[in-house]
Image (cartoon, rainbow, N blue to C red; front, side, top):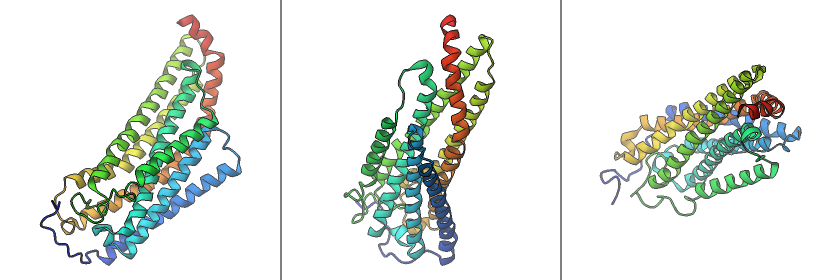
Length: 322
């Protein structure tokens, strides 16, 4: 049964030329800026030969994911400017850029989760576990992330699309199917929000416990207090950036699944909102290099200092306390 039985199949031009430029040019500009930022991160890390560190491999791969997201976003923006109506009614030309866009976003999400888990293990291992994240672990995680993101992102290219039917056609991301968008969005949004929140909260709790333990032993806690504030601040930035970037897209998918109105009836408000969600996702690609790269050096130095303190002072006191 057609999802839109009363909608006309006569796809006439409905986009206003000035509105297209007002939406498209900022999108192109932000995508270009994101490409420059992430290329700078990648080149800098490769030139400085910093990729022998496990966390640096994850940071560099995050930059690659954001680079592909920005590139595919630029591709979609160009299609929108040159032929905006295909972004409403769908076209075969939209399948490849949408698939690349989905794959890149999923890779970014999985990398963000991997970085959060690695940071948790880096802080927790000196007291709670003997497991150490090595370079080959990070490489394996990167490969798994890309394989999983590629498989899920390319499902529309393998046939899971609504290019020749309108039964489950998405009104926001034609020719994607609504059930595919739900299948992709719900579990990955949960992963993007819940796991990083859990890992960074655990890091803060561990630092707080170590600070209290050292204070009970009469030792200085300035380094732990400083690191706790830095981690808490960075964690809030990370979580809020993910929330602001992906929550509107998730809301759009939920609206897509419950909507029963025709494409033309949703113009222009809903489609302006859709384009704004793409801008927010690109802003995430701009924010990641700032949060993870510019602050990584300071945060890394603090975590290194904490490791030294944990291996020299805390264990001896902890044995007596426990």
